[in-house]
Image 1 (cartoon, one colour):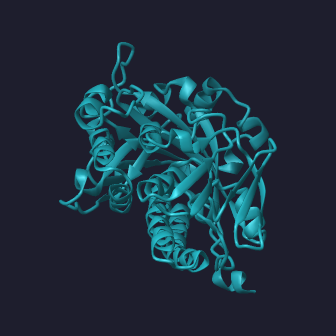
Image 2 (tube, rainbow, N blue to C red):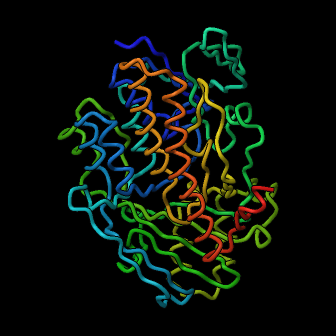
Length: 407
């Protein structure tokens, strides 16, 4: 058993995946989450998990938990379409399949379901209502984390997986910039089955991701989660020890527009679900009636707004016992749908490096620096690709030029 102790700030997808990998390898890990519980607030619905994310989860999860993850994921295929407001196809793309991966490498999972799978077996390692405020390194190379309620935690490593507003990043890299991408999104769920469901979504709109674009680069994004079996049947077959919340098929509906086209943030984020739905309906008036019907069919209780932000690429931090993961270092717009996958890849790479430090005597600072250099390469490549596609398709603010960054 390793004597290395890792503190993880943040119990999102990336932080939990890292904790699962370390726990399985016998590395002591403690996770601290600022929310009051795992289901404290809306953080989104459907997540696209691509080949990178699937391979990471295969490496980090126990075999039974991985099989449950695959069994509770939808398999929409690799079709991604862009349509105009009259549902005329502007662009069609089908991503290649990987026959060695579930769903050919194209899975649609429910965020809550994935978090419940990642949390299984970690319940005693996760503390809630623990908002990290700062940390301090000791002379012997350790680290102490301080939380708003007076708690402290001591360890050898601190990983900031605490999201786009990361307190760890603010102290580690106060110069790192997270910019407003200029977009505001409204997320909601459209039930696809049930006693009160009357909406019929054309099969052409049930691919991996469909973008419907309108005037002023307003858009509606659609992505289904369709289960192949009930949750209780999947758990009974693959992992009876894991409890999952019941869920039914749904369509994620995302309305997006430039911030100038919607109410100011103080008003937007104070609107009720019904008011947000009415706002969306006003923006898609005159579009194909199918679009309006889908927007109108959203469960009002599921609707919430999001401000899109993007990290500005940088060269990372100085070597030491602290590192960043996921949105804390490379937040990106959802334009190419790989934010969660990049965080899962971070967790896989970082787990491997920390296990080397725990079992092979590699210095912790060296292991974390190897992770930093690898992660910055693929992480900021994804940030740049997301920003470029978001700018071209839906008017996202461009990233600063390299010349600006170097000035």
